[in-house]
Each structure stands twice: as structure tokens, then as C-alpha cells.
Image (cartoon, rainbow, N blue to C red):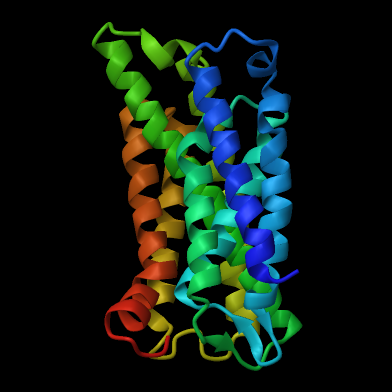
Length: 270
């Protein structure tokens, strides 16, 4: 079966899981909606099929094909996988409502427009660096989604309007704990990504990489300061939300900013 044969059912399962989550959030009365694990079950099939569809366009004989849509789809795949794994024991399933359709969209784009930007030559050192980098970014995608959800929840609660879907969310304290757990693990992975880059890549400050390196270090500093502020001063609420989204914005520019400009706008090589 080719990539499209795996991609189409994966996209349908992503959308089915999203619909089930929306129904559960809206207070669906059936026993199916009441079970978080049953609601998320189609998502497991989706990520498996997503991986099978992405592999042949991502891994080529010339190296790892990290074109813009391939890279975005890889991040979306890992984000969805981490979300489903975490949702098995933590109440984070609501992040699937915005994130799973994004995963479906990026998969479709990666299959339709795989691009031709292989990392050549490939090596285990480079593969380790890429793995840590993509895992870190995927966790920060979850953290950014959690921060936005926390901001919405705070807004409604402060305006004394705790109705609607806000009632289905965990308490603010639990939401903040989940946010900092994501940031803590993401910070550790980002640290490993930067360290592996310094040790394994000879040209990490080369002209075509310097902006990615500096923006990644800046994001690392922001998340480090946020974790320190949480430990030392108990930072929470809007302070935590602002710092989280600022750090994520820097990492988004580092990971995808140049690819967006060079590959999609200018049509050049990354």
C-alpha cells in the first residue's frame, strides 16, 4: 500500500476522534462518550497509519526528507502520539480537539507535497539530534495548547462565567501542574537537542543554521527562567502563560521560520 492508502484512513480516524472529543466535551450522554480511553481509541489507529504513510516520504535513499510539510507532519505525528499517551493517565484529551485536525491536515499536505530537501548525508548522530529536537518541539506544542486553554479557562472564571465547556476542564491548579510538567520534560529534551547539536554538528553556527541555533537558545533560556520562576517565586497564571507562548514563538521561528520563507515563499533550498 502506498502513502496515500495509509494517509486517507489516518485522516478519517483523526477527524473521528476529534468529533468524539467534541461530543464528550458537549456532555454526550452515551457510555461511549463517558469513557476517555474509548473516545481516544481511533486516535491510536490514526497515529499508526500516520507513521506508515509518512515513512516512505520522510526516509529516502538520499537521507531524511525534511521538507516543510514533512517536518510539520512529523511534529504533528509525535505531538498526537504524546497527547494520546499522556491522556491515558492525565486529563489532557481536550487538546486533541485543535491538534488532531492539524495532524490530519499536515499529513495530507506531506503526502501531496513531499518536497525534496533531504538531510544528506544521514548519520546516527544527526538522527539523534533530530529526534531530540522534534520531541522537544512536539512537547512544547502541547504546552502552548495547554497554555492557551488555561488562558481561556482563567478568562471565563475571572468573569464569573464558568459554564459551557469550562465545566468539563480540570481545576485551574491541575491545569497549571500539567502545563509545567510538559514544560519540564520539554526543557530537558530541548537541552539534550542543543547539547547533541554542539557535540555532533560541526557547523551549528554556520550561516544557514545560526538563526535556528540562536532562536533555540533564546527559547531554552525563556523556558529555563520560567521553570526557575515557578520554583523560586511560584509563578503561575498569566505570567506562566505569557512566558510559555513567548518561548514557543521563538522555537516555532527556529524550527519552521526559515523553511517557510525559503521553501514556500522563495522556493529555494533550506
